[in-house]
Length: 200
Ligand code: MN3
Image (cartoon, rainbow, N blue to C red):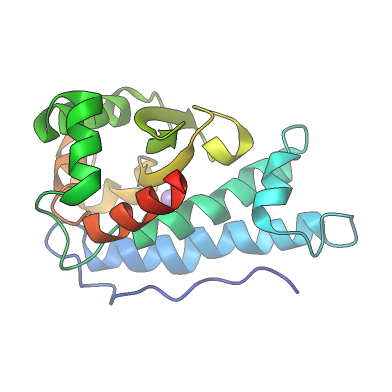
């Protein structure tokens, strides 16, 4: 059974005006699909075939084709779920409490997360993770992720793609504007469920 492109939980234009439809369609059907096709090719006929993507990612550091394309597959799966046309606003409940504990306030969280995303040189990702029950922000290069042990040792619950392909059509070089727009579409209900799961 090879890996397949997941269906987006919303339409390509659903995140407008924050993330434009053309970017979403190309990002999903071309970029995400390419990682999946290349991952399936890279693991075909090896002992990785049939394993879960998480198990594959834990042992792929020295296999660039699997590290890059397996990371690309896993990272985008989480990224799409982290956004919603009904997103934005503020987290509530336990997640909000944990954010206040870790960062002092939601505004401080936003500033620290935006800084991690802005200062990631070149292509990569910003993450909000749960490590030993506590929230932590980190970033990774390329398609690396915390499942591989990159960035931090925690469980990622929020992902932001800062590759230029994620924003260049609409925002060109203005990565900070794209990052601020992302906060308008974050699906905090989803992140809160991931947070609860990670602390179980
Ligand atoms: Mn991408």
